[in-house]
Image (cartoon, rainbow, N blue to C red; front, side, top):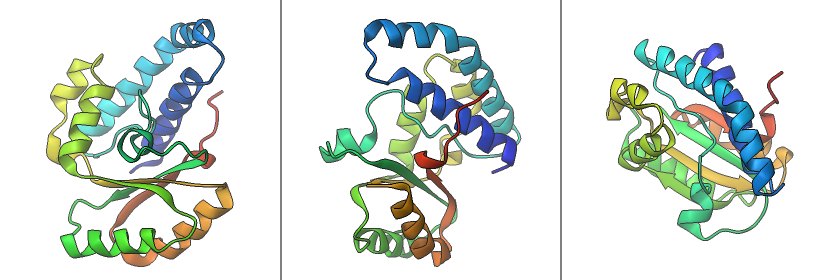
Length: 180
């Protein structure tokens, strides 16, 4: 992914993170109203990147994180997403799965195959039908999503799995910065 796309993804993550803060319904509504233009600009940036052949989507979900929904996990922590290369084999997926399951820092581990990722993408961008129409399902990568207790744990896990060769991107919510 290009740096511009990563920056757009980070900005979108922050917008979503701000919207789900536990500040009450009025604060969530006010945040959503204020950030609507920025969210549209981020979606437009993603549309441009996707039309250029780059496969990605924003990290932050618009609803509950998949770890909470799929795994029943209510433990607090730092969310991490590990996006796989498109040409990753089943054996490589299994190897990464084992490495993550064997990592003592990792909990709430969920694998998101391409079909699930596509459905998630469509839900997240339901208000941007042109973006969804311009995106091919096969351009959405599979991923592992999990939590760790703190940022240092994320760094340890990344060092352990980065050399497996099947990872295209390793994104930790602890590294997301607030857009200016």
